[in-house]
Image (cartoon, rainbow, N blue to C red; front, side):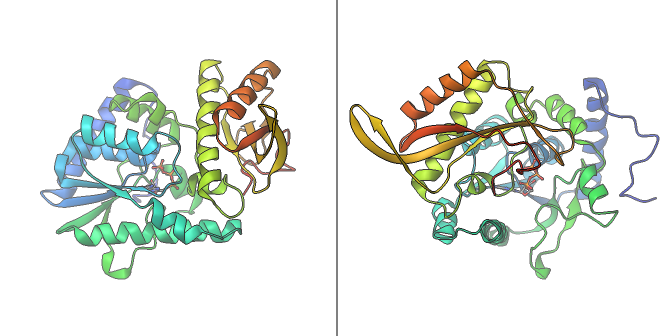
Length: 326
Ligand SMILES: Nc1ncnc2c1ncn2[C@@H]1O[C@H](COP(=O)(O)OP(=O)(O)OP(=O)(O)O)[C@@H](O)[C@H]1O
């Protein structure tokens, strides 16, 4: 049987009951595959790796070693939430790596988006590899590969997660959600007791806020992206747009403009708001956000976020613009 093909008889997981059955089956499978050995997992706090972590914790408890890398490019509150949910609530074996300085030092002065992405990806593998080498007796690597990853890689085994590890570090893979579609992964995550804001999280680029802090990343602009993004998310949630708008975020360009505050001249950065809807990410339309809400968000960002004196709303559909700015 082709392990990479979803059997036609497999029912779409649409209810908690179906999710519970799936969870029960996977726990048995994982126990059988892993035995008393140790499993390593890179845990981003995104839906896929979080669901895999929760499943494995249920199946093998502390035999799972989760590694969460804080590279400084995560959204506000995310690294804290990973620690709270997995270490404090689920009692998981979680290694939290503070690699903020390491990533930001490597990225200093790098303005080209492609180069930024490459540096972030390569540094992530390096940090993960270092942590893996500190562990003894790891035989398995768990991954949040999902069915679209397999379909997109055309049946070739998808090492979508931590591909790039050196040859002497090849582990047997544990991929319990590999035959599931995203909506099913979310239902399974909910059945496993993961918080809604983790399970129904909007898509987030791999390089994180790094590609929303446009041009060469600086700490002040990165904080401006993180804080303005948190305000945008809070206001969208309060005003019924969370779960309705497909993706929304802020970006901060690397130029300043003149403004005025308390009667004095300012020279500070603008924040760009983007809020789009799409079916397949190939094209996207701009959300018609109520003007009064945009005004309120502008008021909050210009008052609460350091070093910002303007807010712009990106009205560009895809095409001509892409969803992300970099
Ligand atoms: N900061 C991080 N710390 C630990 N692992 C990470 C981190 N960022 C990414 N990963 C690992 O790389 C995988 C792929 O990351 P990517 O950002 O492409 O997200 P994804 O495919 O949507 O998965 P997820 O929903 O788990 O984030 C993640 O599933 C996770 O295993």
